[in-house]
Image (cartoon, rainbow, N blue to C red; front, side, top):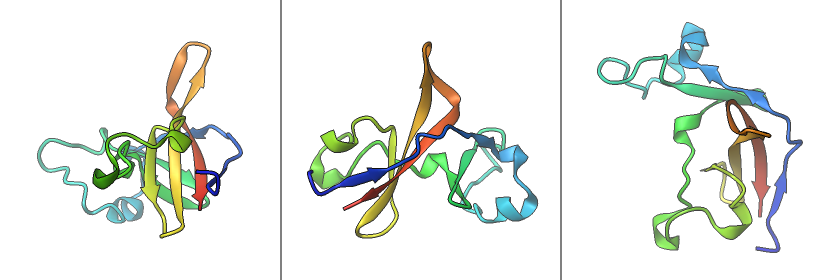
Length: 112
């Protein structure tokens, strides 16, 4: 898609584990059911532009009507979350010479 632009500074952001969140921050994610199979130890988040994002909310599928996986213009990213009709947030795990670094993410803003 030639009219799509991804804005990122490639800054590796720390992954924040759920147990590191304050009670007020946890309250923002009241959909996370920690009573059965999950615990706050399992939930992972990152901060981007002053907002806390749940990594579990990012999808590697661009949409059921468009097939599986992300389209070619987002193929370097691990997950996608719609932000508005014309924008989205993309994230990928940072990489080093040994492969993915699951302690950090790189985030970008997709504009169409």
